[in-house]
Amino acid sequence: MTSELTALSLACILGLIHIFAAVHVKTRQYGRKWNAGARDEAVEAPAAIVGRLARAQANFFESFPIFIAAVLIVSALGLEDSWTTLGAWLWFAARALYLPTYAAGIANVRTLIWLASVFGLLMLLVRPLFG
Image 1 (tube, rainbow, N blue to C red):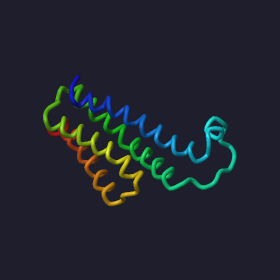
Image 2 (image 1 turned 30 degrees about the vertical axis):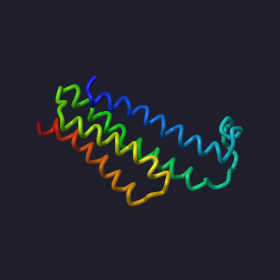
Image 3 (image 1 turned 90 degrees about the horizontal axis):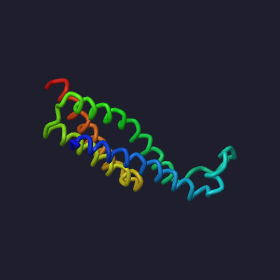
């Protein structure tokens, strides 16, 4: 398996971590009965961490499909090289750092980490376009 596909496999696990982290803090606030129920009842406003993890999860799943497509395009065309490997791992590392940084509420650093992830995507996408 190529480095890019390994990063993609680990990114799938990271997606699950996002889901479980967000649900865990929400369940901790509202309780297991709420989590197992239909969730139709009105609840108190979510704690800050609940909102941050939900937004981090949404942000991850906004760029994850692009990452999937970019890795699959590079792989299908056999264009893997040190540039695409670096791009894949840059995106993955940035996305892995993004979750705890956002959870901690570190705004400016979070933005720089997000920009690094976008640069990683661009590194993957320019290879098929410009050879």
